[in-house]
Image (cartoon, rainbow, N blue to C red; front, side, top):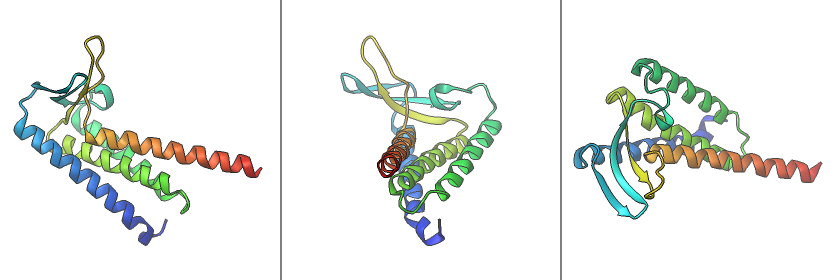
Length: 160
């Protein structure tokens, strides 16, 4: 991918990371830790701190080592993104969202020592992990990459 082609995707990465950090700053400033604010019967804001990665996995690993691991993953994803074909617009957007979310969470680890989480889906009998906007960007981005791969696979199958 040429430098000029990366600019729109770099902008997506930057906007995603900045938006994530802005929301987290509001949560930290306005919502007391562990306080739940119900929005819908199944959705609440719940200020939480995650010292691990997804679903608090690796929460026992030291902050420096976890940050180093996340940085390595970010570099790997950036390499994959740079290797995408110019026709793979969904994958490029997906990788940009993944990178923006990962950078947002990495900033948390570096600055705060934990990731701020606040979106809580639940029912009286079931609850989902608490997550944040960066996690949503990562999830949507991964879905876009998968959709692109499926579309490419279908095109190749139809041609072959």
